[in-house]
Image (tube, rainbow, N blue to C red; front, side):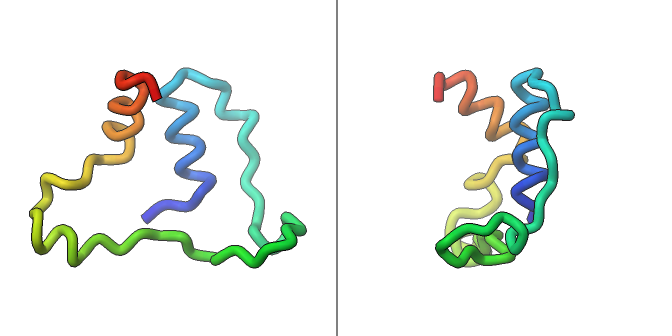
Amino acid sequence: CMSRYEFAVQIAKENHWDVSLIKPAKTSELGQRAKRPLNAGLNISKLTAVLGDRIMRVVREGIAHLRVMGA
């Protein structure tokens, strides 16, 4: 599980963007109207039990795959 900040940093690194432009912020400090969960992690234990480890990629590999696909 990784934070939204860590995820954004991984995306920036994979695309050779300036990581210093990404600043961490607490959800509570953003002043958003709609409530946001503090933990937005995805539990894939049931999916992994059915499909095995082949379903998920390492984040870096998944981002690279999306870039190659033109997403």
